[in-house]
Image (cartoon, rainbow, N blue to C red; front, side, top):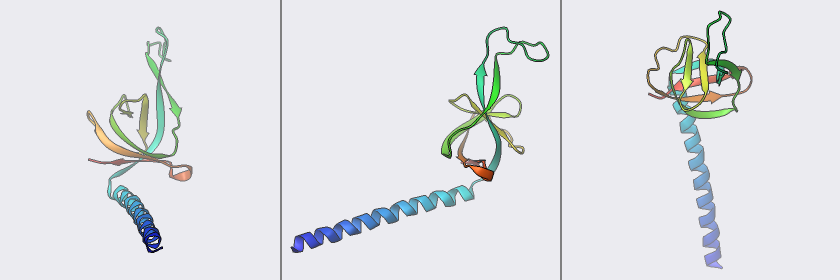
Length: 129
């Protein structure tokens, strides 16, 4: 019987240790985001290729268009780079970001965390570097 009691006690200790560790990691992540420089994202766009010979409103030939899109709520580790105009490309995807205010030069790649929330909070980009 003594062995069984020791086993139960060790199981409880292990369980609560894991629970504490997970909570600690989650709190570190939240604190780290608060310490990073943040930028409000106005909108996410998806780049869509168009048929050859497609013209814009000025009669100039275009290869693609940008359409508003949405992504699921969550935290995303991304890398952005300068895109056309006021847009920034999420590297490795066909998605582009537009910021509410000036972001600056992203160059050939800026590591970031994109936080997508519902409601008023919307989307926030946190610079890692």
